[in-house]
Image 1 (tube, rainbow, N blue to C red):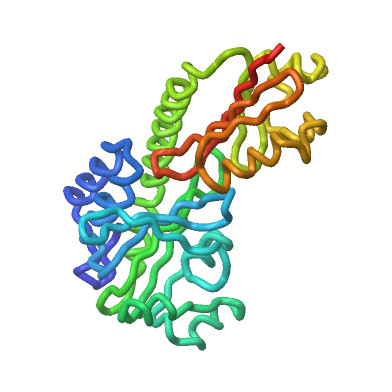
Image 2: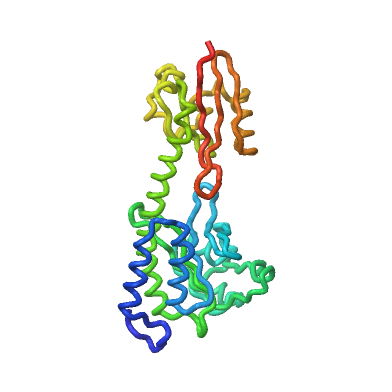
Amino acid sequence: MKPNGNEGSIISKEKFFGILNTILSTLSIDEILTFVVEEIRKTIGCDRCTLYLINHERGELFSKVLQAKELVEICVPINTQSLAGYGAIKKTIVRIKDAYCEEELCSLDKELFFDKSWDLKSGYRTTSVLVVPIPDKTREELLGVFQALNKPGGFTDEDVDTLEQLGYLLGIAVNNALLYQKIEEEKGLREYIIDDIDEGICILNTRFNIHSANRFIEMMSGMRLSTKDIVGSNFFEIFPNFAQTEIEEKIRDVVDKGYRMTATLPMLEVKIIPYHDANNRLSKIILIFTRTQ
């Protein structure tokens, strides 16, 4: 990181490695989205910073911010109506001196638009903006974007260089934290359902695709497919006889209402159990099949 004449943007090695240690020392997504981001904000010397992660299922960016000592989730569509969304779509750095200047936005892309509604609601005035993609090096995809707002004098080349380097490290930290969270959720999932397992189990995601299943489900398919073969497939495509029956109706009710239900079919009773992740979002739908005869 070379000096460029803007003393305020030059980061000492000690400070950089201090942030590096902070980034890589946590396995908590919430800490990364709040405490780590705040440390980076202080280092860059801007007014606000947000690390947005991509939710591919919902097609949006999400983050968490502290409001009155409570974590509040915020979501932004992945489209050209926001600078963060544009950065995610194009997987490119966005640096703006004045977000309200339509001429400057058009010089980057004619479709680029800054949604002022956030400012109007809060009374805030966004001026300078820097958006840097956060790469997922393990999958060659994008994990999210880091957005910094309102640095006096605007963001410099030095800031871009710093955030690119920190963005790479953030990608590693987020990957580690998501992996840890997934392991913990899977452990919790197993503990959550173990007392309810009678004979067969099938776990769906919120799009009704099969996440995992046991051999009982293989037998239900007439041994046409192994559990390995059906993972990722739509439950109602594998079992079309269940479509437009009580079980589909109850599964959709569980998604909408968030509590357990039971469907009774010829020779089968099916418990339908919602499973919520650490953010209290419906994550999985657990189907437990029990023979009644």
